[in-house]
Image (cartoon, rainbow, N blue to C red; front, side):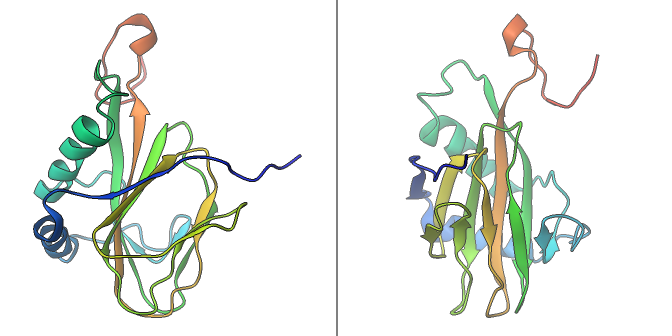
Length: 178
């Protein structure tokens, strides 16, 4: 049986608004897109774990403001942040982000013709608006249909429970093995 998502998602804008968007746009133009066409993202994509000043600012806001009530014990951490840049006809296949808890998309640049973020089962669409932040449970299938313009740029990422939290350990890398 397949059910249609009936979930709440968070949509908002970072308090630094346009200044942060411009910083991330600049950073997105200075990085290597070495994972292009190798993942569900059938477009230009950076490595999975990007670290920039703008991403750190976004992380602080997400962890302390957006997720503050959920993260009072610092059990959650952000990982797998990446930039994706779409040209005409480029897209992302339907997928999920387990074992992460939350996933997000931040629309950095959305020229006319930019494709929406689509939740695959419900077909609900989030229209791309520059500066819009969208966070949703990682188990929700989502995709990006073929883009109709050049230079649609997003920052995406995942938030997970820190490995070892069940036995009061803390690890900065959830993939680390004993």
